[in-house]
Image (cartoon, rainbow, N blue to C red):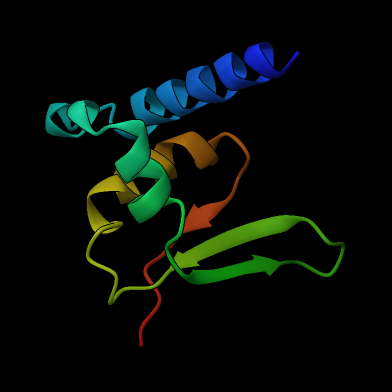
Length: 89
């Protein structure tokens, strides 16, 4: 069971890398350790509407590591009608 969960986590990280780096081929070479350490730990805010639906994500604009991933994140979340804007610090 643990081996299968490990494989699922690895595949999930690989898929996320592909989705977020669609138009930036140089980001495809980012390893899973860097993705977990630098991208998934970025700070920011999530915003919800009155019904509790997620409507916006604002990564911290001062965090330069997340900037190259913004376009891929926008494209991924566009289908859910969630906007991505850099927060002003």
